[in-house]
Image (cartoon, rainbow, N blue to C red; front, top):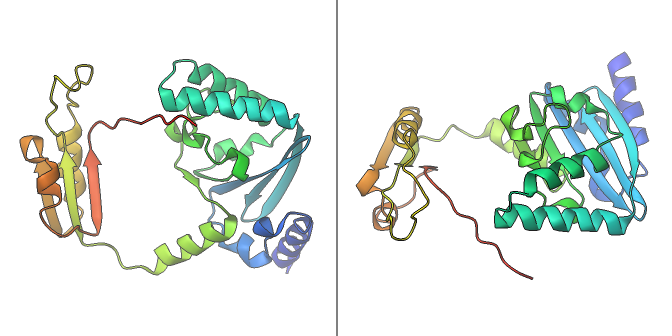
Length: 239
């Protein structure tokens, strides 16, 4: 029918893409409604973008010298991993520069899947600013990063057929040593989040406050789901 013809036409347009990005009509059917997949391929003088949805394909090329792209990526990843306040400004510069000609309809998607070129894989995609609202992508939709469309399709299929997990260990609001972390405040909703999450599982274990220790966490075999509500600190590595 008409839908099959559309899918066949979309698949034929993807033949020039390198092997890791080639899709079939079946791949398009597998994309859930409300999901947009943003695929990138870095070229010598620009980035080729593909926007994939279950019933359509849009492709655009953004011209940018490879040296400039590497500078933007390096500056942004370094600023983000080190907690530099300049990360927000660099993020806006990046999205304005490399997404300027992309079909922004993906910003209306309920879910966003990013399949970045290896040169773009280390970018904090979920926290990059939405070109329209200025808010991080993650504030308005779940963001998934996948090494390829095929991997995303495989994991979606596996999740669809997998039985729902039954056991959880939920850690909430571990006590902080003020001498080690003088700048971290107690998170007022962390315990409630852990308790609320645990109620969805028949076999639940709560580690809250002073009971949330490394020894308690590892005292028993790990459950199917491990939930942590608390602070996390990144470690910036040079080189």
